[in-house]
Length: 394
Image 1 (spheres, rainbow, N blue to C red):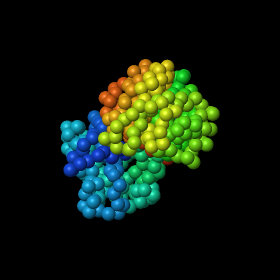
Image 2: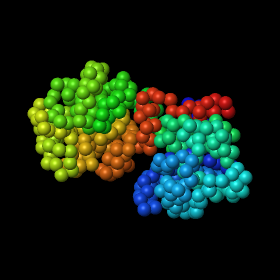
Image 3: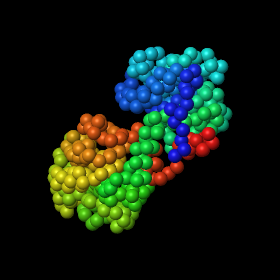
Image 4: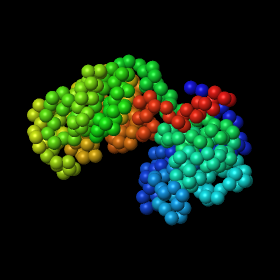
């Protein structure tokens, strides 16, 4: 790739505008999970240590565009600024809506400020040129470091990179691209993909793309139920997409997809439901498949142990319910124990990683959700494409 890095520039006394993904959960005005803030810290600290005026911008939730933040205070970046300041050991001020290029020129090197939620700005989602030019006017160097929003062509992710004097990638974005490239472009063999989720249709592009790249493909969750039905096994009243059964059969003909041999079933979808172990041939009409059984867990673990590259997206069962969490736990621990290269992405996947305490044993954990899936499918990420274009025209 021809993407330039933040390390390619001298930052001292420069205004550096960094687009981060600081879209974190907030409750009662406090950040309750600062994982994304921590992921962004190395980039922010680097800019500050190099003597830059450091301006940050991010979205938070889904506010109404054009409505003042005072009228939708629950979407204010103020709690993020508070937590970021605590982690940096310095004040991080929120800039008002009328913050101007002239105001940015008055900031002293070593200062760190955060713009208010970009999604309240008119023109953000449609990538309006006037808003993108405004962002570009605030800085000497624009740094795109938010992989999780790289699949969106918006003013704060794509437009600003077109108009900024200099545009480059931050280490978080570069790390994501390098890790995904390692897993997908020239992976060590054999390679395994694990794709879980509720519906085949929601992950169809990912499944089709990976089927041509991997040596084996494990499917989990509701997706596995559709594959079981495609193989002729009874699935009771489990979540199944009948219209995807033919597609599942085509995918099974294309690549090696090992199916469960035993499953954990319940009569209802409930945390209090009693879990019953059954062979896949013995699922009753009123059963719901909510997890894999111990024999399948063992077989999947053996497959995982034999792999040199593993890409993981999505849980194996309804891991939010304790009785149906064991399949996901066994599989996740097998991935963690694997000595090869592993990359994991997606919200539920990261939740599972946190739940089972294996984050230090996964080679790379992607901060992106939709961007991760689109990259896996081979889609062009607009924010990455514009940085590549800028890199060609140094």
